Image 1: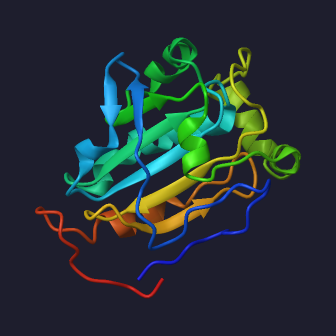
Image 2: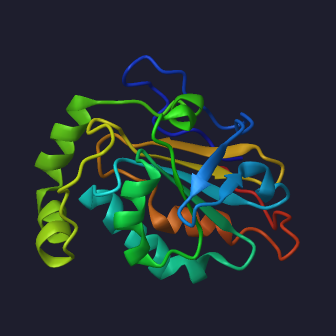
Length: 204
C-alpha cells in the first residue's frame, strides 16, 4: 500500500491523499483536442501538475519524463497539466515531443480539485536551494521564463493512480522544483502487468 507524501497544505486547500479517488478532469490538450481523464480508466498512470509553461524547473522535468518515458512500460500513462493558457503552452511544450498527454488549465480548476496550491515561500526556497538547476535550465537548456502566463506561486504535485482510479501516492512539492523522484514513478509503473493488474504490492 502506498501512502501520501507531504500531506500538509501550504495555503489552506484540501489535499488528496492515498486511497482517495481521482476527481473528474477534462481539459484542452496540446493538440487542441479535449482530453477526459475517464479515457484512462483501467490503466495505471501519473497525473502531474506543473507551474506556468515557461517555468525552467517544469521544462527540465518535462524533458526528463519525455526522455525516459519508455522506461515506464507500455501500459503506464502520464498526464501533465500546466497552469497555462493553451496558446502559451503551445509556445513552450512542443519542444519536448512528449509521448503523453499535455494539458492546459488556465483557470486552475483541476489544481483546486486536486488541492494543488500556492506558496511564495516555495518559490523563494526553490530559487535558493536549486539555483544550480535553475541556471542549468536557463543557460544550458534555454528554458527562459520570458512569458509568465500563469501563477508564479503555483506549486507542483504528482499523483500515482492505479487502474481503479484510486490514488496510491499523492506528492505535493515543497518548492517550485520539487517533484516525485522518477525512480519511484518507475517502480510504481513497472508493478503492472500488460493487462494493467498489479504484480505485487509494497509497504511504501
